[in-house]
Image 1 (cartoon, rainbow, N blue to C red):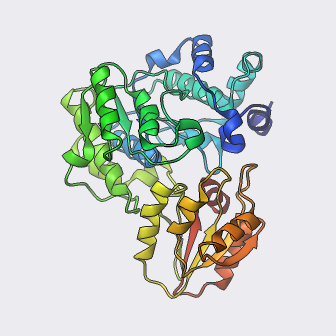
Image 2: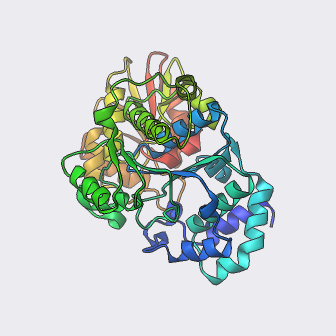
Image 3: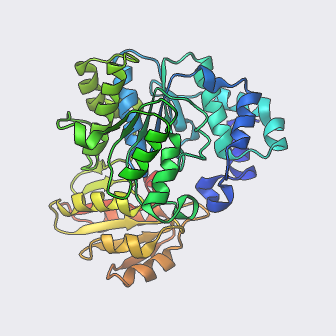
Length: 406
C-alpha cells in the first residue's frame, strides 16, 4: 500500500477514538503489551518523559522537546491528535516520520494487526516506539492519548512522569468526578519514578499524594515551586502553567543528573518552540486587520482560560467560528462563550462532529446567535467576508475545526 492507502486502511478499517469515540476505547492495555512483544519490546530501550493531563499536554510536550533540541539532544516526540497530517504525531527534532517508514511498518505488521484487532492508537504507539529506537534518539517525550492508567503509552518506564492538570473531559471513559479522572491520570505514576504535577485543586491533590506514596515516588507541585518563567512563542494565557510544569521537570532531571540543559537552552527552547517542533493551534494568530486567532481548547477547563483571554482583547465586533464534537457537555461549555458575538456554527469534519443545526439550537438557549454552515472552512470564509478591519475573529471549540482552517 502507498501512503494514502495505508492511512485510509488505518483510519477506516480499525477502531479509532478520534473519529468513532466510545467504541474505539480499550479497557486494558493487553493488546499494547502483545504488540510490544511482537516488536521486540522497543519501550525497554527508550529514555522517556511521560506527559498526561486534561489540558496542556501538547504544549508541555513541545516545550520540553524544544528545550532538549536546543541542548543538542536527538529528541523523539509522540503526540496526538494531528492537525493536518498523521506524521505530525511522530517526529524527531521537529521532522516528521517519513511516509515510507509508516507504509513499511504497516505493511510488514498488517497480518498481526488484523489477527489481533489492534486499534489505530495501539498501532501508532508501536510505530512511534519502534521508530525512535531505530533512529537512536537520546530522549523521547511521550504524550498520553487519553487518561493514563489504561492508555497504550503506559508500557514505558519514564525518567519522570508529568500530570499537567485535571478537568472534566472524556467523562464517559475516565469517570464523572475530578477525583476519578485524577486517579486515571495518576495511573502513569511508576514505582520510584518522580512525578511533576502542573496544577492541582482540593479534589485532586489527595489523589496524587496517595498514588505517589503508594509507588514511593517523589512528587513535585510545579505551581507551588516555580515563581518565575521565561517568554515563549506560545502566547496563550494558559501557557504560564505549562511553562512552570516544564521548568520544574527540567529541574528534577538536572538535580538527579539524568539530563543536562543550560538556562540559555531553556530560554531559547521556549522562544523557538514553534520553529523547533512545528506546534500549531495554540492561540495562533492567522491574520491581522481583522485579528484572527485559532485555538484548539475544546473542554470547559481549557475554554474558560482561552475565552477569558478573548474577553481582554480590543475590537469593534467579535466573530466566533464554533464547532464541537457530540460527546461534549453543552450546558457546561456554551455558557462560557460571550453573548456579544456573531456566531458561525459549523460541524467538525468527522463522524462524531455535532450537527451545526443542533449546535445553533442549543446555543440559542444561552443567547448565542448566528448562522449555520456545512463546514468550518465555509464558516471561516463567511466570517472573514463579514469582519471589518477593527474586528476580531476567533476559531475554535474543537481540534478538528482548527485543523480544517489551517
